[in-house]
Length: 610
Image (cartoon, rainbow, N blue to C red; front, top):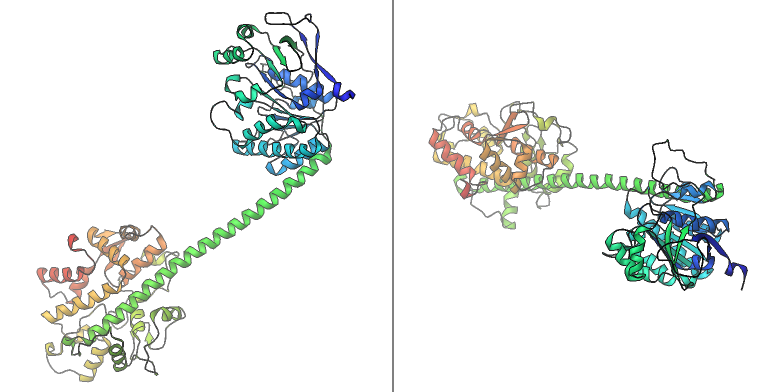
């Protein structure tokens, strides 16, 4: 048997008092075998101020004096006082520590402790996040256990407030499960563990009953003394309430008796003592080798570098996400405009082909009849095919006016998409202080002219009367051109409010409304209900999100069509009745106006809401 296997440490003396059993006289020195302490399972308990932390420190001081390294999990930051006499690596989260560590340092800490004999204080008292502290303890314990399988070197891990990791009630987290594993299987590998707690009733009983040595200091709470009675006997449960500071019952597997002992006073600074009224003076502490800290610092620097890279990548991802959302909004707007242009162009063809307009009543939903109509109106390509769709033209529209259109309206030979763009890009309102157009985040197109130089923009304003309703001679060529293009001055033609004229306005405005999407219908219905409102409220009322950019973009379509007008301070007013009245040059009486407006509103208002 080698000297190391028989080496002991002196930690206490036999005390005189109730409960002590044995042949040793009071004052006899108590020696504990080092190997059994380092590789065994221990438990030290006692109420606050009874001396349990002092007992743990006395054992640690004796082990360090004999060059046996330990690792202390310090939950209250009270073991740094050991650095007054010994060189320990104080690792934790506070600036007072030698090094700030995280779970990334766990393997290196285990290597220092086992392979380089560096005693370590793992101070978890400074972590604001309990989960971060628990993860650190878990990882360090895992690496210690894994390395000891190969090294099989006697080593002690001390856990303060162990009831927080291995509670009697409730589930255990990963840290507690790892500590229980060390308690059950660590001894065969040389890894010992000792738990410190002031509440034995709260510590998992499976851990206490497997311990090789135990120290019971003063306990007074009934639940705790019951634990003493079940493990030691009722006479010890009574005697333990009257224990003095530093006194305790020592129970070991290698001794046949329960001894009442008085533990020595620790020699190093007592950082866990209750503060007094005197000024606190921190003692001079020994520093560890700088190379140990530098090795750990490299891990910290690498961790910071990775975190910085992750932060940069996360920022780039957020920018890309924002760009994607912006493109999605722009795509949605483009689709809305595309649908509006296609539907409006189709409505114009259907109107031109209607019998009361002199058309043949052809079904333009049939490709062959639609192609024939396009050819007759000069709107087909040279090869006889239908012109490009509004989706394709909308991309080119961003580069400026296209062939066959001008900012003032459609020209001879314009495509249906040119017609739709001319309508969509014309601002029919009379005010020039719109909040939406001045807002940089909502303006997606150059601001259009407020009014065409030669009169109201076509085709929203102005009613082209029937030929028979015109009094006097007219220029037939000019009339045919006006009939085809809708380019005329209202002053040159005298509108007559006949039944067909009313149907003309209703059909034309209904076609414009139908060209808009469901969201526009919902927003227009909201303005009709409240009279005056704002784009965001209308957009939300239509079942959409509160996206300001999208709301103002869709609001602009309603405004350009003349269905709403700016009312100041970011508000917009329902304007369809005034628009209809203007179409009829104010010649409708109140009932006729109301009937006409109601007929148009049926295209976007549910019957139940009328």
